[in-house]
Image 1 (cartoon, rainbow, N blue to C red):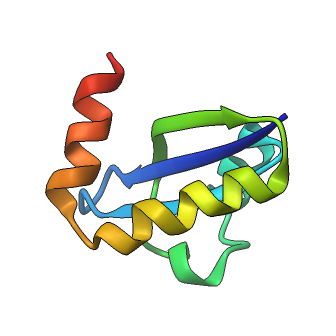
Image 2 (tube, helix red, strand yellow; image 1 turned 180 degrees about the vertical axis):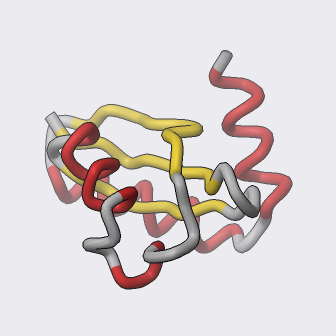
Length: 82
C-alpha cells in the first residue's frame, strides 16, 4: 500500500505534499530533520492522506495535487476528508 499525503506545519501552517509506502516512518523523517525541504519548519502533522495500490498511482496523485498550486484546493481536500 502506498500513500499520497499532505503535511501541515504546526508552526507556520504551510503545507507539504508527498508520497510514501510508510506514512508513520515518513512523518518521523520530516519531524526529525531528515528531509531538507521541511527541516526547521515543523513540527509537522498529517493533515490528509489517500491510499493507493501502487507507487505510480500515489506519485501521479501527488503531482496532480501539486499542479493545482492552490492552498484553497488543499484546504478543501482536508475539510472534505472529515
